[in-house]
Length: 345
Image 1 (cartoon, rainbow, N blue to C red):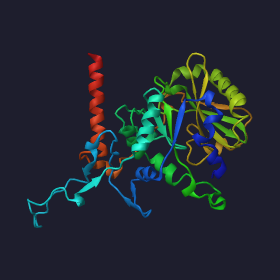
Image 2 (spheres, rainbow, N blue to C red; image 1 turned 180 degrees about the vertical axis):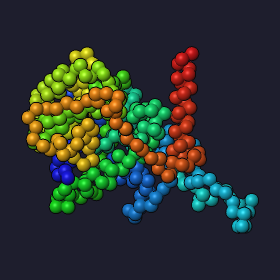
Image 3 (cartoon, rainbow, N blue to C red; image 1 turned 30 degrees about the vertical axis):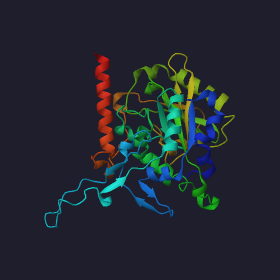
Image 4 (cartoon, helix red, strand yellow; image 1 turned 180 degrees about the horizontal axis):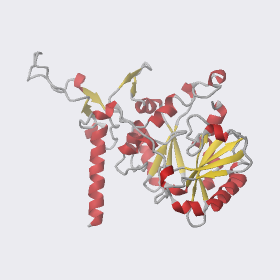
């Protein structure tokens, strides 16, 4: 299990300023407790208690029409007394959509500052398991509502919020107060035309680079097989010059992207060693053995391709009523299809 300090060092808000010239432009916002409760599908009452809520996108500060939505579609019980003149807007059948006007305003400003497209993540994780909810089919977001849709749909984000700190080996001994821990929304500039074959995960054991794995293990890229030496040389040089002298943990992983032309190395992320970090083409037991040289592993044939991450649809997304997550998803998908159609004319 990872130590708490090693886990904390891997927060993007912790390492970003150390490697700013070598990574993707990112801006940060501290997240209020009410928004964190919303991401967990809970409402935070005045007395500090939580209760489950249906999935609704936040009420936009610029659109008061999205103030209230039905909590669910209701079907009259034929055995009950039904008064057709009863007030259909009874508070029991409605739920008020949450509203975060200050946070929304700040997020929209940062999206604009980053060029109009961003990838959201929390301290450790991006909602990479929720791209099925995106009309773009990726982590790209252009608005506050799109960010909420991805974050609320992601098990990775729930893990950050509820399991990351307690998963550390010495959490109980450190007595880390979760109520005092600050979660951040990190907005990373959207970088188009990323080629997945040039993304790699690097494994550092006792401050020594011991392994490099192709990150996209669901595909075979024959061109990589002729570039092995260049890939290793570029990443080893980057580790020796940039990462090793600065990053303080002994055991960790870091992800990089190699540009196509000059094989410049761009730092993407840090992750703790073991457990919740995927070893990809390695096994953790292998990586923990003594190694003399850095080993690069690639998918070397179509027969070596591995299955991708499987995701499930949370129960509350089955609601397709107005204002629900699926209603917003279908609306944005329709707009994207229309945009692409108009662009092709």
